[in-house]
Image: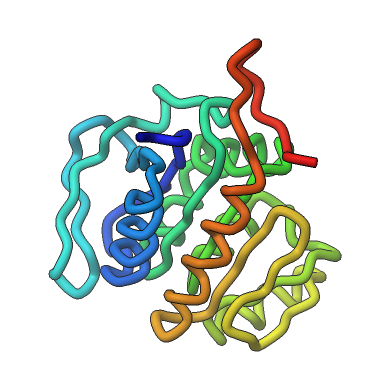
Length: 186
């Protein structure tokens, strides 16, 4: 039984495992995951060629308010997505909701392009860590870093811990049936 929906922003060249492992884990826990690409039905290919998925929804069809959580896999996908202002705006609007936002490897590039990282604490792939520091972020080289609603991770080796931290954050939010709002559990 689905507990709510999670948005997964995905473009070509995503790191196969950084999509598949958290995607499968979130679905196993009962959440619906919408793969959001540039257009509905577009085929997206993983960098390593192990994964091919179709976008469930196009970025123009979705609203951040409809999701309990946001997943941003790494690889080249975030770099492709951040040149599209629609994805950057989605990330900004989602972050303003203070719901769980999970980004791994190069995923924080979208947070960087959204100008959200100054003063925040996070991690990423080593080359992205330097960019984050230059933008005023506090960077830690750890498997998982949690700062308020953000869960960030560095690389495929961290995916089990990353997925678990994201699940724990999702469990802290619930959908109220009275008015459809999502709010944090007390």
